[in-house]
Image (cartoon, rainbow, N blue to C red; front, side, top):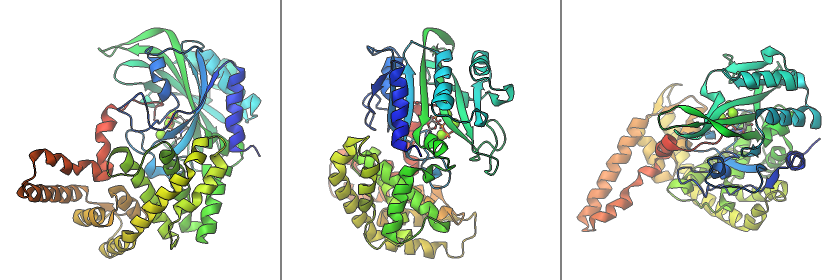
Length: 470
Ligand code: ATP
Ligand code: MG
Ligand code: MG
Ligand code: MG
């Protein structure tokens, strides 16, 4: 079996041999884009190169980039534990051409690596192109010899990428792996495309236009290439499993949580083990990159992810903090590729332990309150907003954690009621503070809207610069 570590190495070696500069992953906190919460695609660190603001000595690069999609436009948090292919933290393998090679070579490289170098069965592969991109369609016919019905024309934005309202943009072409008809799902563009049978493994973006202020797309004299392939997804394919959570890396993490909790990743407990493994990775890597748990911004996203995992540890019956005891397994799996994880290991363990100790003080009581409040509720019912607010305010349950806790029974939350309760409390606190004679400027302190969890990031979503297209 080819290990995930070997697949990452193999990808970089392949593109290194094809004159690509091998670049280490950038940290998860973007240094070049204040509008973006976390790096969510391999191209993000190269944004300024694509727009021409920065130049590089080599016109080709390849990387395995750490990505987090747990907020903003790309939020896969709610998919974790429920699909075979989504993580909050994942690695995106990418090759990039900055005005150097274009479509023909990008497709040739992808096809050669997948089917010749790695030996994937070509009959399992299906591609999509943007509906007007005849050039890409013809190249897939010519290079891969794919039959026309397996080059699917897609007219939606899934196959047209743009960096923002203006700037580089262009059609993309995605490569899907068919895991077989024993799994539910249909080919891209079909009504059942959201199933897990056809899994998108690689997205090739052809940056060939520059979008103007007036919305028109002008051809770029030197078009560029940006590609992104999910390492965990290609590892599943190459290890002969359907599910990312059955790959070597995840199996090691899940074995560790099974041992420490004395439970099995089966039946009802499967999702909990998966959520724990996934969230262990995202929280550890975020901590290693300097994000600390807090009540706002990036730190609050981190805290929300942690607490979700900690609730699942509780579900598995953990009587003591669990997360920090799993960091060693993660370091053993990924520390060689990401030495920052080894350097930060003691700090990650200490932080997780402290956070879990603190959260466990209120977790039990919060869960009791939730159980009482949901007794007699029917699927489709919503939890009262002020109960969700009490859980948030008194027991430290982020809004999305409560949502996650209710999901299995098919319950929702009265979100408007939650917001009203939040606003009432803010108003009361403000009045009390004013009465104390404090300066008006201290009001800023009460601007806790940011702490509201899922409603918190609409501001980012509106103008978030994006990597790959959803
Ligand atoms: P999907 O449609 O499956 O959500 P996407 O179109 O959002 O994927 P892209 O933005 O094109 O993904 O990212 C490039 C590649 O990164 C994808 O082809 C996939 O292999 C991988 N990828 C994207 N999101 C995730 C995730 N949450 N977890 C693991 N891998 C991912
Ligand atoms: Mg995609
Ligand atoms: Mg997609
Ligand atoms: Mg997506």
